[in-house]
Image (cartoon, rainbow, N blue to C red):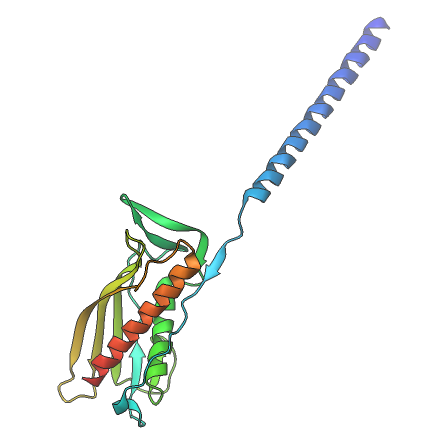
Length: 214
């Protein structure tokens, strides 16, 4: 009888300790989850914006033919979710909690289409893989190597712009390197960098239109 009572007492004591241990563990995990939830930052998404430009005189009248803008080529180091701000001592610097709203190559293509369409309102301009019931007569290609800030804080876009004109007698194709730098340094705010890069894409659109003139 004494042995049974002692066994029951010991069992109840261990059960109580186990319950207290589980309660402490649950409370601790809840506190950790609460802290991690407080420390996480909601990502912000950014997209390039079209920039208006002047309409060339020779393109002020309606013109036949359509322009297809091929999907822009970007290096893998730039083609990521978070915005690449630049390089810092051989290290890739990414913006904190700032991401592109879509893949950079697709966004560059659509922005360039909008920029060129604003400058050539009488031409049909569309992006590659968009269904349009017209056979394109001109093609625009964009290959980007740099799309970020340099070590001095300026926004920089480097690459090659190409234009192929099948409607010309010689079926001509022209490629030119471009190097654009923002007039002033850009702040550390990702929105300022995106705004500056949007201006640079507008300059690239001007260059593409100039090549189409030739």
